[in-house]
Length: 442
Image (cartoon, rainbow, N blue to C red; front, side, top):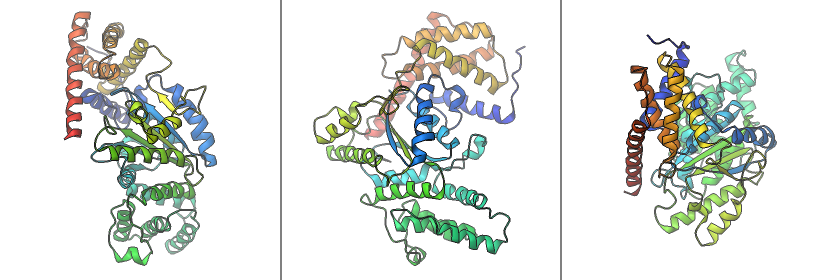
């Protein structure tokens, strides 16, 4: 009979969620990526110390380009940065970009996606179950309201006096470029103080960029509409308001879908690149305060390797390479970790094995499990030139292997069996990638 691994109910629940998610697709789950992170400290530590703890608190903003192949850890890395930033008091929005639902050539759609994915910094001690409700500007404002009541010491006041003081203190939040945006944020929070849910939702609808028509908006002089021309002002205003209200700043994490910039009309691609260049330039302006932007792409040449002034302008802004020794660099290459590939996979396998054992309350034979993981790692690395990252192939091959070993603890993964095992999971990932590409094209 196998020994038992004991953990708290929360730990077991999160471990099972992570294992189930990885086993299905190999893509990182919304929560829990830190439980199996390997080799990213060389990038995460300088982002924390140089930017989140030093430069951004002084009002400086920065842009980084994250480069990683399909399945090469882009989303995992962005989640790590998001969680690290939230632990330091930053509002954050992870935004998946796509040519159909959120193209970067339409900045009004980008703003709407930011508003849909904005998260309040709940902190690392918050249960993962609670985090699932922390998404979107509606939830963000509800958390801001509770946070401001504690921050301003209003919880112990008589309700009428608390509401009066709350309105008065809200008037002190200035410095927002769009007057309509500032008024909408204040009106939404005042509605929460008045326990007026219907009025709150009207202003939330406006802040989502849905351009509602309601007399209460005109009465509050909230008149500006979200359009492609006003979208950047709304993004800047959001960052300014977050800074003014007392949070540390804002982290925007854009995850570019495969082929996203190469799809559509040339005019749309050029507009997307012009928007990206403008976003990078805004990071050097004081009107865009305390913002860290990470933009992840599968191939940097989709941005820079074409003729024309837009590509040349981006190429000039994206020349330098980020590292622990050069934290002012722009490009973060996820393939260039300070650890050799096979030891990386073995360490990753050990962390996932520990997580698996916690999820299922079992203890697999240590030596046999390590041997199986090493065999799998060597075989997977031989596929490093495939069109799917060998890291994702390893994860999607490892979880079924651990399932097999839970049922048969004496199971030995031979080299011949590993070859068939890995090829099967590689084909499944390639089929999935082709399906996604077809959906994007049609």
